[in-house]
Amino acid sequence: MQVNRRNVIRSLAGGGLIMPGLLSELLGSEDNPLAPKKPHFAPKAKRVIFLFMTGGVSHVDTFDPKPFLNKNHDKPMTKGRRYYKGAGWGFKKYGQCGMEVSDLFPHVGSMADDICMIRSMQNINGDHFGATIGLHTGSDTFKRPSIGSWVSYGLGTYNSNLPSFMVISPGLPYAGGQVWGSDFLPVLHQGTRIIPGEEPVANMHRRNMSAGQQKEELGLIEYFNRRHLAGRESDSNLRARIKSFETAAGMQTAAPEAFDLSGESEATHKLYGLRRGDTKSFGWQCMVGRRLIERGVRFVELIDGDTRIDHNWDAHANMTNYNRLAKNVDQPIAGLLKDLKERGMMEDTLVVFATEFGRGPFQPVPGVNGRGHHSKVYSSWLAGAGVKGGMVHGESDELGDKVGRDPVSVHDFQATILHLLGIDHERLTYRHAGRNYRLTDVHGKVVKPILA
Figure 1 (cartoon, rainbow, N blue to C red):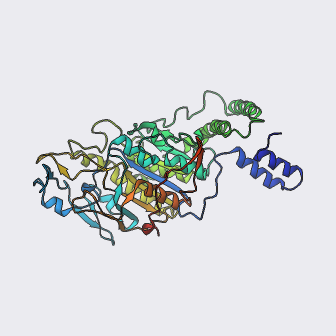
Figure 2: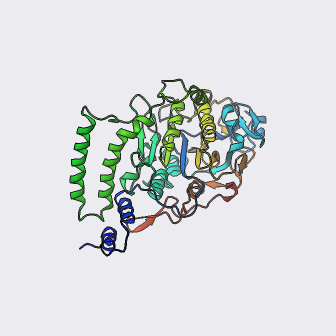
Figure 3: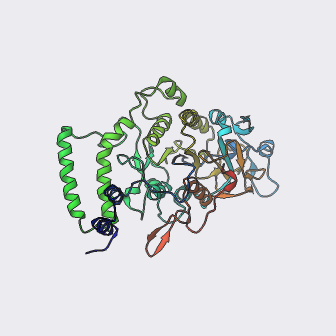
């Protein structure tokens, strides 16, 4: 007989060493790779909503005010053939903390006392593809599992009828599906993409048959799947594949209700700036994101923008696009934070605002209306479970060109998110190709000053 965990459990049960109730629990966990798992230590956060702004949001125009840069706008630098480019919008102080946020984000600014702003982020790559996968996977050159997949693998889910990792993305960001890919982790941990619209998930509703007929059909499929699995219990990929079929079937029950906003009040719709019946705006993404984590999804990513020109934050030629882009996300993001607070969910939900890099504080000639890529320093923020609200961590220099104090790498950022979920980033590993891999590779340290 092949020796594996399942057979050992059955042998102990046969000898009367395991009580029937415990036997059922152990075997259920073995059959379900997505069953909730214990974290390494007591977590502050149980779930994550990850807001990703595709294209590289300019830090000096949004969350990192630079008076010196503004004062010297269009003036030549003392060295080189470049000119200073000041912010196109003013900044105001918000909340009791006095955090400065630009006029592009007045609603987010109103939540300043709940936000931990990081003004010293650094990415490992300066192009969209490399920076995007660097932020999500820890590697800017090789395919690696996404952070959401690592969280799914490490913690499982609370709802067996929904995937543990879901991504709401109208279009494809730079790097495409690698942003939510599981790579060498079992495919069950790959993010399930939701496309806003009338039918967010393909085949979400059952085919033209009665519920009883479908139950009989699924029961027959399960019977043959289990027979095929017998003797192959150690094949984790096979078990994961079977479980993915079961989750897909469960989604036909759970997903339609999760995406149905008809029961949400007018006040809640107004909070997100969402018109009733709208299924495509970022407000819809944020409200659905909240509903998914309410229903046990462990990691939800909401992506704004795609790779089309003028449909993301990559403002090489026209910074005035930010007026439209910011208006699209500002109120929904603030509404999400307020809604989570009112429902008592901020205490164990981590909200992350991220982008792949910032924008450069210089221009080649005076009067240029755009900005180039800038990965040496930029801004991101966290809010919710385990994070100090109303604080700014790190700073850039007076130009917003380099880190002035307390740099935070993407690996530090990832390690901190995992830490808040009760995961030691050095212990969350997966054996592949003869070595142990982890999200942060051989890097990363928890940013302890921001922890509550």
